[in-house]
Length: 533
Image (cartoon, rainbow, N blue to C red; front, side, top):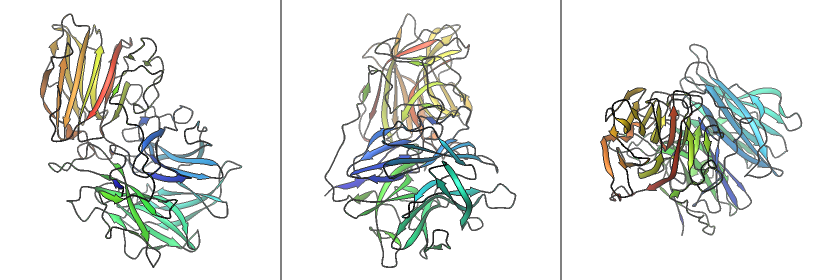
C-alpha cells in the first residue's frame, strides 16, 4: 500500500490550497516576493507531485516592484466551477505595521496551465481570500478583515460578500460571519458545504509555532457559526519534539473514492537550533468526519504525521526533475524564479550566447526593484549547487556568481569581482539582517582566468563554498558558514519565506556588464553522505 511521505512539497511552499478536478489533484501555494506569482503542482495519487503552472506570469497580472520583504503574493485559493478555474490571491504592499495594504484579485482560466486572465480587483479589507461556490450556483468571497486601530485586534474577523461573474466583481452587502476573540488570530478562511452545514475552516494562532486548524459550522451561510467544541483539529503547538512544527492553514479535498485529505503547511526545524531554512512546506493528512459531524485526523489526536495512508489510487510518479540545467532550452527552467519582476532581454538572455544563461548586471542585492537574479528553492537540508561562470569585471562595482539567500538582507554570495590591487578575484559577500561582511577579505586572485567554477555545499547548518579554475581541482574558500541564518527564525520579525540558491549579476555602475553561466546543478544529498568533489 502506498504512503504519503510528508512534506509532499518540500522547501518554501506555504499556504496550500488543494483542488480535485476529475482525476487530477492540484496544490496552489504562496510565492510572496518571488516572480512568477503562485505555484501550482499536480498529482494523480496525492503521493507524487510535479510543478505544472505559474499562473501570474505577466506584469499586467502582478507587479511586485518595490514590495517589501515577505510582501507580494499571499495565500492563493484555487477553485473550479462550470469549466472554469478560479484563482484568488492577495498582493501585499504593506504588512509590517498596524496598517496593511492588502489588495485581493481574481484571475480565471479554462485550463490549469493557462493562459490566465488579467486580474479582477475584489477588495483590500484584509488578506487570505477564498472563493466559495455554493450549491445554488452563487459565489461568495470570504476573507479575514484587518483592524489598524489602537487597542483593537488586528485580526478583526471574517467577512463574506457575493461575487458576480457578470459584473465581474463583488456585489451586495458585506456580512461579518465570524468575530475573532480578543488576543486571538484567525485567518486563512475556507468555506465548505456538507450534510446540511456550512463549514468555516480557519488558520488560527498565527503562522509560527502556535499555528493550528479550527472549524466552525452553521446551518445558514451567514451564520451564526458555532466552533468545534474540541478546539483545534490540527496543531503542533503542544509538542516541541514533533518533526513537523507550525502545522496550520488547512484546505480540504475529497477523492474519487470518497476519502478525505487535509492539505496544510508545516515546517521542519533543525534540532540543533530550532531554525527552519526550508521554510513552511506543504503536507497532507488523512481525515474523516466523526458521528457529530466534525473533522478529525484518521490517525487520532491532533498532531501532524510524517507518514499517512495514501488513497486507493494507482501510483503515478512523474518524470524526475534533472539535476543539471545546461541552459539549452529557449525559455528558463520553471523551477527558477526572479525577485519581484520578470527579467526581460535587458536583464536575462538565453539566445545571445546559445547554451549559456546571460545575466546583465543589475541593481544591488539589497534592491526591492530590479535585480538580475534567478534562484530555485532549497528543498533538502543537505544539497550541493554548482555553476560555471565567465565574467570579466573591470571595477569593484561589478559582481557575478552563486548565491544562497533568504531575502535581500540575508544571504551568502560566492562571486567573481574586481579589486584594484589584486585584479580579478573570487570572494565571499555575506549579510545577516543587513549587516554585511566579507569572510575572505578582498578575495583570491584569478589571473588570466576567463571562467571559474563555483560550488556551494550545505549540510544542515553548515555552508562551505568552493571554487575551481579547471574541471577537477576544487579548492575550499572561506570558513564554514552558518546556513541556518537563512530562515524565518533568524531573520527579522515578519519574515516567512525560505532559503533559495541561484545565480546573479550586479553592475552598480549602471553599465549592465554581463555574466555568462554555462550550467547550474542542484543535487540533494543525504545528511550522512559524503558529497563528491
